[in-house]
Length: 354
Length: 112
Image 1: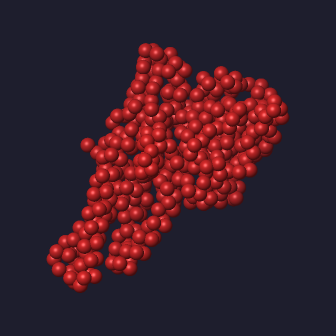
Image 2: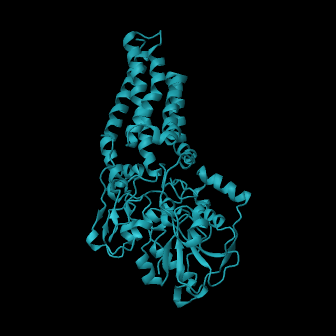
Image 3: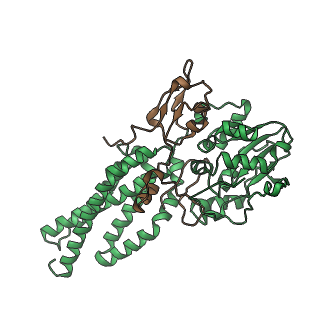
C-alpha cells in the first residue's frame, strides 16, 4: 500500500519513516508511543515559532498510534494530524481521558489544510489503521475524526476498507469534553467562524511573507523620493496585512478586493494630502504627487487583501476566481498609472524641471 | 455588486437523499439542515466548496467541484500558465510554504 500521494507537498520531513508494516507480507505493528495532556513551555515556544512561520517543517510529531493516559481495548480512538498545533490541541483537550490517538502523516500540515489536499484523507487513515494494527489493539470499531478532516475522508470508503466507522467530532478540539458527554454536537460545535482572535493570530505570518519585498521597496523609495514615500509603501503593506485581517467584517462590501481598495484608499488620503501640499512643487506636479499614493496604495492593499482569501475559513474557489477576474485588472491599471506618475515626477526632478 | 460569492458549484439532488444527515454533520457553514423526510439545502451561498458533504454522502446526492479558495494559489497557477481550477493550496512543508495553521484548524493557507 502506497503512502499518500501529494503533488504539492515537498517531502520535506525526512526521518518520518514510512510505514513498512505491509512490506513483504510482514505484519510487525509499529511501536505505540506515549503522550500526555500537558502542554509544556517548550510546546508553547514551538507554537509561537509556528505562528511566525519559523521552519515550517519543524513543527511535526511522529505519525503513528499514541497512548494518552492508560487506554484499554475499549477506549476511544481519535485521529489527528502530525502538526504540533493540531496534535497538542487534541491531547490537551482530552485532559483526564484515557484514549488512543492515531496521528496521520500529513507532512506537518494541520487537519483542515491537509484534508483539502487529501493528505489527511481516506487512504492515509486506512493505511494508518492497518499500520498501527488498531484492529488488534481495540475491541470496538470506531474512530473519532475531527470534523474538518471530512473534506479528505469518505466514511463509507473507510468502513468498507478498514471496518472502522468514522464518527465526526466537533470542529474545535476544545469542544471535545462537552461533545464526549453524549457524542452529540451542537450546531455551534459544527460551525467554523472567523472571529477576531483567529484573524489576529494570522498577522505575524502575513507580515513575514511580505517582509522582504516591503523592505527592499521602502529602502529604494527612501533614496529615490524620501522618507514619506517609504512610509507610504510600508503603510500600504501594513494596511493589507494587519489592518485588513483585524477589521475584515467591518469594512464595507463583501469582496476582499473591494474591501482592500476601500481600506487602501483611506490609508492613502493622508499621504495624498501631504504630497500635494509641497510648497516647492508647481501646481501640476503637486497634483501628480497627490494622485500617486491614491493610485498605488489601494492597488497594493487590495492585492494583499485578495490574497488573504487563502487564509480565511469561508471563501469558495468559484467566488475567489470571480474576484480575480473582476479586480486584478483594476489593480494592474491603478498600479501602472501610479508607477507612471511616479516616474514622471522622478524624471522631472532629475531633469531639473521641478 | 461587490459580491462574487453568490454562486457556487454545489448541486443537491434531494430525490436521492436517504436522510443519513452526514452532510449536516460535516458542513462547516450550516449549508444543510434537517428537513421533514430529507435533508434540506438551507444556505447555499455560504458553501465554500470544501467538498466534505459530497465525499461523505453515501448515495451521491451531492455534487460540488471542490477546491481551495486561495487567490494566491490560483494567481500563481495562472502566471505559470497552468489551469487555475487545478491550482492546489500550495501550503507545503518547505520553508517556502504558506500555510498558517491554527490550533483550531481555522485557516487554510496564507499568501506566500
